[in-house]
Image (cartoon, rainbow, N blue to C red; front, side, top):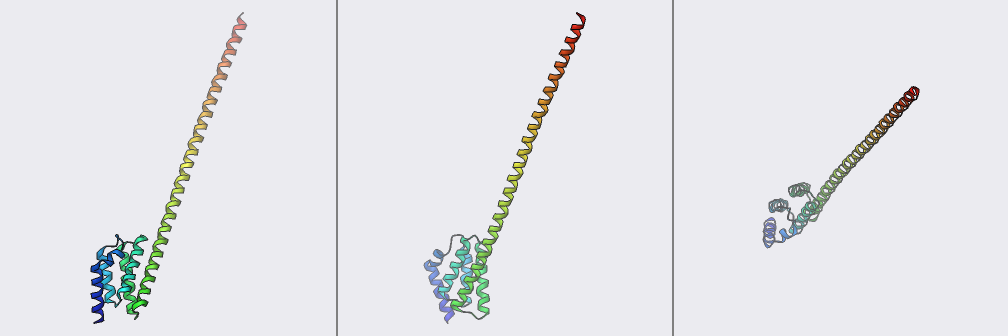
Length: 171
């Protein structure tokens, strides 16, 4: 009888729209409905259901997919119920599971960002190396061209001196 009243109360409250206002746009109505059904079947009261939906909302806002957030909450509720927890203790277990999953997601997100930043720095360093290599090749090319000019200049001077020497001998 108590479960029937809770299910009825949750349905009435859901009909009034409080569930949709608590839940983020990303959390689909289907996920929330499934979680509500799981929680009411587990004997959770409406205030704790609302807290659990808030936990889903927090996870979704932190980037956890809505379906995954719903699964975490449902699984935590079922485990807590199997352990004999009810009411606020069950809701606390659900919140703890949501908080743990949120922390895992944040750590994974930070690790991914760190990897992305490291890759970015590697690309930047590689770009700098290529730039330095191009600059060194350009400078080496300049040095070779300068050397060639100097060699040609010396050859011209040698020829000029040779011709001058030949011209002096004939006079």
